[in-house]
Length: 545
Image 1 (cartoon, helix red, strand yellow):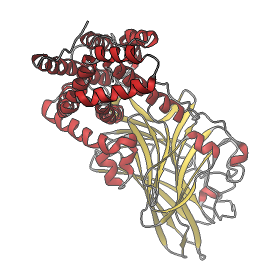
Image 2: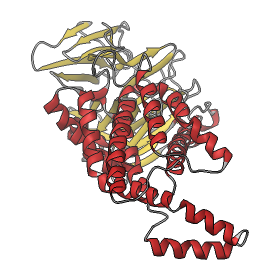
Image 3: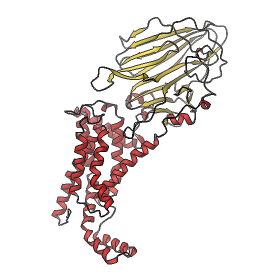
Image 4: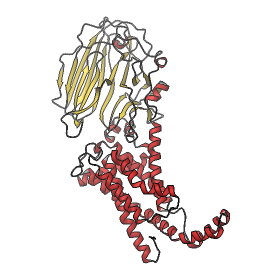
């Protein structure tokens, strides 16, 4: 296979891959289907579109004690959090260790309202006696203070509510120093003379959003894990097509976006029901319902769950749930991406700079792949050296393709040349390239990571487009080192403009990715010169006219 054809092949593979990703996310903008939610959407207060999962409750009123609705402000070393006392939902979460934009003083807002779009974490109690099952709407909790600050290792924020029967409900959020996982405790004190039943639900609500651009291939949507399926994406379009309804031992639900994730992890020793829907106001919801709990008269019982809202840190996520680290989605090549990421982190721990670490991992990968690269360029050179003989065979047999094919195969056999020798190596290299592609896209550590000079954010495009231009120049040099032998005019034009096309295409790519490809090309050029020089010493003509 000709080297120019290999360039075309790489380009087509890359574009095809991105087009496949685009097609895969093409229906992430569904409209709410009222018929899909009519059966499960309960009537809450008129001003609220919050969803309460259907259960066996009879809709008995809870008759909330008088409490003024307010917002609780919570500050820890990693969070600024706001909790609405109506329902006790987390309605805003700022991550203090992460900037909204590079070098800004504003922390990154993970949960909250963004230009009319909502992203909230919700939880409550339904069942026969759950306050969130009331026809009067969700309860408004009472709090002793509206502002809390973490000063030690742990901060507990209690919200209390007492229904008309005197049953006391205490919803407590537990924040810990340096942790992005928040504990949830629901304590129910049944002071009545009859048994009661409650059922804990936890969910995430997010306004349906449009998919990203062709360049932005990061998944935005829901995901879940069960005892049978460790990790399954459930996109906005999936929710519009069918409500999720799965029973599982343990499990989890999550909403995923670029670099960050929020997830509810229910008690793993019990059976939970995972569900989803899209509300009439175009909010996508995914959640988990625990088993109904019967509380005898005079007894107190506590129900628990854990909520994570923070960066995609594989080690932390895996510690919370054995499969939650899969939300760091490396795609179908995860078994290659994961060890490459471990290697990249190790290099950074030694070198102290993510850009230098990217260069180092590129050198390592290219060095390990050198035998394949040598086989590729050697095969290309031998094929090029046979061009005069190929031309003679074509003149000899004319339009008789059968005889021409037989003669060509005999020549390959005689000259000990494999016509596919230049193709197989590139096919083997593509999985590594794609695996690294996902590593750079999914690694939170690369967000706002500095390199040198003007490259202050490897997760963003090059502001001056220097790297894409240098990348195009490296492709042009590679073409010049491998003179064009393609005779088809259309393919010749494609090859001529390929560096320009790729440079334009890479203008919007994260600079860390472009850095990898640029360094890879430069190493390939050096390897090509070395290999060709050795072949020319052996009398093999490599670069013709």
